[in-house]
Image 1 (cartoon, rainbow, N blue to C red):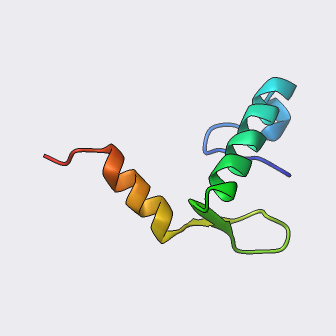
Image 2 (image 1 turned 120 degrees about the vertical axis):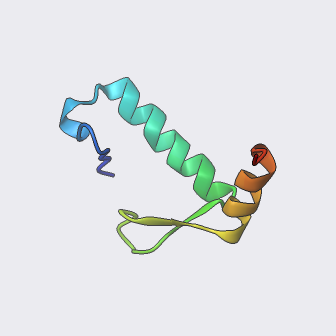
Length: 61
């Protein structure tokens, strides 16, 4: 899996950071908060369950 952020790409991340991010994606996907949009698992979309969970976590003012 290639991880990329807006600031740095995976070549600049150390091994621990890659493992942590990879695990985070797995947890989100296993809980059905995100869903892969391609067989390569490069692009994900937030599911309704993900949006519902997010809405429960924050109070809007």
